[in-house]
Image (cartoon, rainbow, N blue to C red):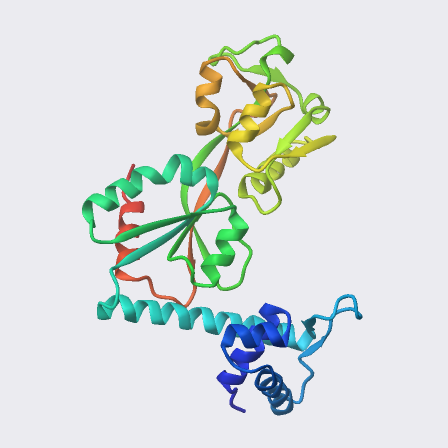
Length: 305
């Protein structure tokens, strides 16, 4: 059996857009043509691929189990097609060279700028673009070939995306100075137990954040189970909230270094644990060779600091 890629493309747009009419607008064809293409694909495969989502109040379409599986392959196929077109355009001189880097928020703020500066000096004709988002969003964009390289703060869990260890980053637990007797001396962190930390309000990143996933995992291994937590969408926001007395948090040392020095937050030392750290990762799309611009940036990333 050969899969008709035109029919597959139409079906993929229907799933992504949620309706025949929206897919028709996206593809610049008529709605009957979209409906006919999906019906023909279902006939060729002898499978139902779409079903109605809800009743009259929710008249959209959703894929069946078979349709969802097929759409996952379609997404991979068309993302690689997009990457191939971009590569040909770059090599044929149809546009200026471009490098699109995806970075999770802490890396973009504290790690990436120095590498970007080196790259801009060595390759001044390459247009640089940085997309900043949480780890899960970076993984999704990389899979869809909207990024050339990804740099994130935790391991990823998506088929088609490979991750490679890149750097180690120290993490610290911090709390508000007024709540601890060892008030804000950087050389002498306040000693706390797992039970004490478990009773605190923890300030954590949103779901999908690499900082959140790694921090909760490290705390769980030490028997720290937060009784209460508050989600805040940036590490800097969490650090300021700790300083204001809202709760405690585990954050990259680079984020809170200045606040510790100024006495705005206190580093907390968990009994029995010398240090915390996490691994930073470099991501790549499997089956997509890196462009010349991406290879040059990878060379800079891999140089000793």
